[in-house]
Image (cartoon, rainbow, N blue to C red; front, side, top):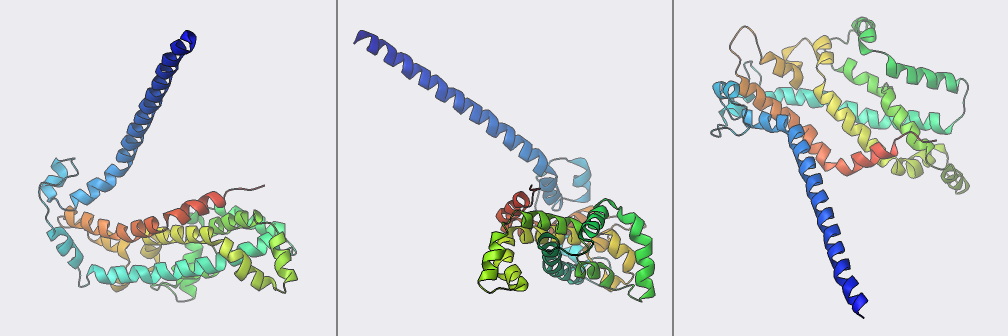
Length: 297
């Protein structure tokens, strides 16, 4: 009895030490995570805070909290220095982004389905060519594409930026979907075939619902890339009334006059909002799509 009574306090002390150690490790872990998250979020926090500052305060203070909240930078920045407001540039941006996203989520899964589920002549060669385009720098094709669209009289229009998505010219998205489809057992296709489904019905009714996380992922990627695209509109668009947000922001930084940086930053914050809101609304699907689209054996 005495030995049991002696060991009981020792066990209690040991369990208390273990709990304290786990609690201490958890505190250290969370402190490190919060610190790293703050460092990564600081540029965005500073951007939001700077949109309410004056030009003088922007260049004299690194603190992201402004001395006072001044919304005039948003009001004046929205008016721009041209005859068009940022409403026009936002509408122009979505005229590019929405068709690109819709065409991407339609054509890329179809092409991936063909490579993943069907055997046809020169399949390996065509797949190798598809993958090789991932390593082809965009600058190599920039001049030939410009000459191509010029011959078709599509310059100063949105066609050169939208048409590639019509033909699934997004090898990264196609490859990711192929890897996802390779992880889906072919028994699903066979069972659907026994039930009387054809190839199109198998794709739309069986595989496409399973592909949903990956399709949402490529839609998010395409949305963010198209929203942030600066070079393509700069090359193909020449009319001010057709400029997207990226070019409009560059116009507001005219070197020939004093730059109102608080207005530029305010419009930059607004231009980031659609991508941020869309990402957080579909963050779970985005994570599931990235993890499911990994390389499978």
